[in-house]
Length: 56
Image 1: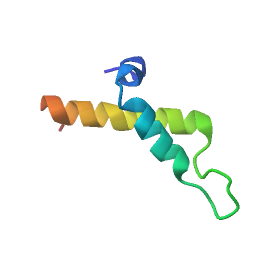
Image 2: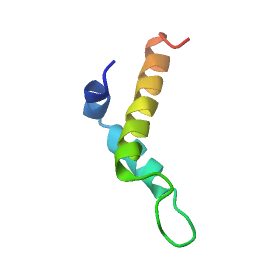
Image 3: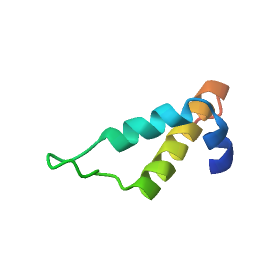
Image 4: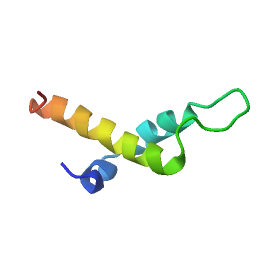
């Protein structure tokens, strides 16, 4: 599954917000926006692979 397909999943926004919610005490994000998008897409790919039984 591609990152574009992962982003089409309605749960992607929730995963992205969770990734971006991680921040330091001063409020700066631990994961910058571009990397948060990549992380969320990879998490969605893992979730969908698990759901379809294609996870290794």
